[in-house]
Image (cartoon, rainbow, N blue to C red; front, side):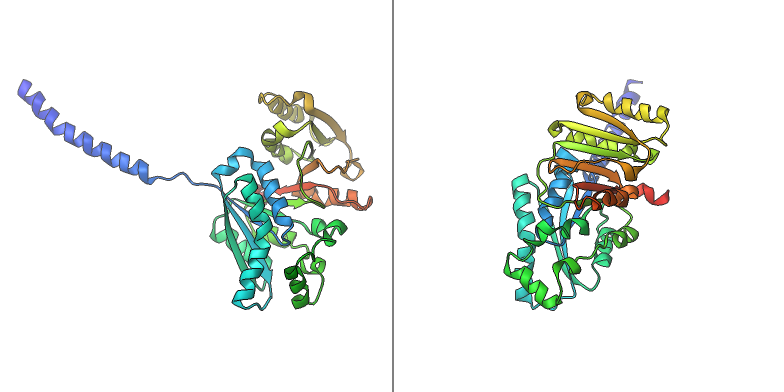
Length: 311
């Protein structure tokens, strides 16, 4: 019996070592998938704004994600030397901001006939999880138009295209949304996107509660969190999600102000440089219309969630 036990031990020990090595090799070969963020910008001045907004959205988890900065030029016939200098000029502001924020960027630059198609193609081929873009409302604002010709390459762009920057960068937001399937963040920002200390969240339906997920990353720098909720939302559901938000232990209870509304087009929203409004894309245009009457442009972050495509 002793001999049998020894034989069994000698036979099983090598087998166990072999199995262990196979599993160790398997564990080493399995890599954790890093989520991908693509920041697609037009004007050089919009690049840093989109990067700051991304940092605000994702907080410390941004260091664990793969960040791509993309700029696409439409229909320009540039030689290689001119294109190299042009691309360098486009990326310089966002690269400087990335260095300041300690964010590593991968760059994509391409001349294309259709910018929306190119963005959609990269999102699909690179399996982008989050796309961050700007809206024409931020580009068309007068305070930005004053600065868009501050260097030679912006002037060159005007000469080649034969029209204004404002006309060149028409609003392609809807076209991009229709051609992509990832979560898309749309930033409206009339000026430099500075430190945000006040947050306003629009809850217009039960599908909008997921906006609460972004509060935790932003809460430390906030002094005020205004939650506007539609009267059509049931009280039980509203209270349930509010309690869940307050129970997460981030110390935001004293910062939150609650307000109900009957119609979104009658909301009274402030327009402060340190305030950001967050909404789902479904009510994006309603909020813009609120400010059009005031001849103003708010800091607005509108989100089209990936899973909302099937709704």
